Image (cartoon, rainbow, N blue to C red; front, top):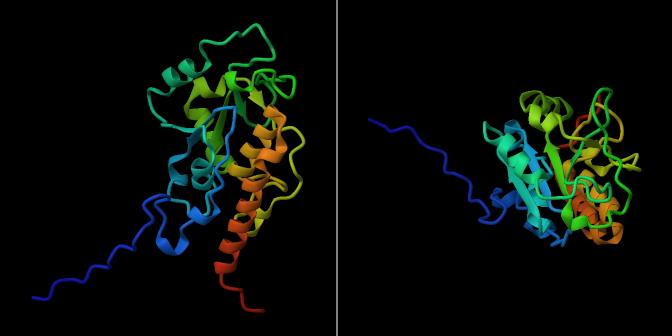
Length: 213
């Protein structure tokens, strides 16, 4: 009896865990961020080949993942504890998310007086997926939201992934611009943003051109 043939698994990079043909390690730019970043990723984003989080996580010195689940409320409570809540220049945690009616908005003076004392919380996923995360985790939704100030109007990310609204950024871009504003040091994040633009261009070049109609 003939056994069914199994397709061999493509070899993967041990660092970024991507197939070797699409390894992104050449685009990693080690970046010493002062504000620690905590990211809650939607489960359906984990296998998204066009996602920007892997490059961000490999590049930032202080970038941590949050696991969605029953213990998330305890993790969030730990992140926001132990800081002086009465000092507006030292917000314990900021949820990087657009402001909406009915939700508290954080307005810390920029740059922060003590950036290392603040945690930046980020949701990784499409607009619909992030709203789902907020719906499923009330402790997260209750946090004060911090809209990104002076967000760029355009992004190279649009070349490989569509957004429902013009000017919406990738997770990597949003975090880099947020850290630049919070820390008052935009030059620190320029190499990583430039590397991301190069990676996007590389991904766009892999997409076959559509035939002319």
